[in-house]
Amino acid sequence: MIKPYAALFTSIVAVSFAAIFIETLIDIYSTHPLSIAFYRLLFTALLIMPFVILHKKTRNEIRNLTRTMLIIMVGIGIILAAHFALWITSLELTSIASSVLLVTAHPVLVGPISHYFFKEKLSTINTVGIILSVTGVSILVIGNYGLGSFTLDSLEGNILAILGGVGAGLYILGGRKMRKTVSVASYAFVVYSVGTLVLFVICLLFSAPVYNLNIQVYGIILIMAVVSGIFGHTFYNWSLGYVRASVASVFLLGEPIGSSLLAYAIPWIHQIPSQFTLMGGGIILLGIYLTARKTNVV
Image 1 (cartoon, helix red, strand yellow):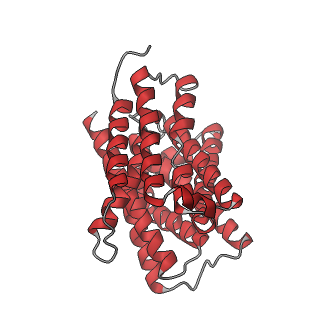
Image 2 (cartoon, one colour):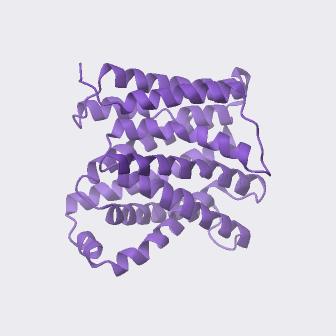
């Protein structure tokens, strides 16, 4: 099981770049959040398309998907589109503290559901790991931004962040179910394509630009699609075929750690991690380790 965990680790590092790209696009280029979400999924689907076209086995698999499988994957694509739209938009309507804390709380949802419905039993140590990980995120976020930042929140922004977190949890659970029978290429292409179409409609409904963006914006989103889309979400989806949903969900809590380290390492950002980032990050890593441990279920 070395490879699945290596892919999972790589995916977390890759998705950690997303916050850097999104911050650049919104702050420097004033790009609409929904436009970012739309082009991120569009470019990721287009990057996978040549593999699907040239790979006969993948084409045949997609062609032979049962109606039930296709309906489930369409549903997952809609959920993924909703997750991106809700989470990125929430960043404009509420504090970073609330948005990050609420959207990364999905292990609380994924753990019990995978335990009772997918029969992926959690031991006492695994449960402690999930609680520790969520606690670590709370320390990292609240410590950095303070409880006072929550007074800046809007009810609408908080609701969007919560729904974005629910969407992330359902996306993980759906991926875990489908990746047991569908290859990652077929799964990713169908889900990303559906998500792209849904986000296109959402952009039209909310008057978000879908053309004539700055050429540099297209370039940044394309890089984000390669890094956070292919090496992030697609590697993550591949690992879901081998790793328990609860473990994969908790691993995603490593994203705030990765984003903080990248913000420090990238010269034009260079944000020095605070003691709360280091403390919370350490607790998150411990929680991930305990959640991933294979122990006898009690």
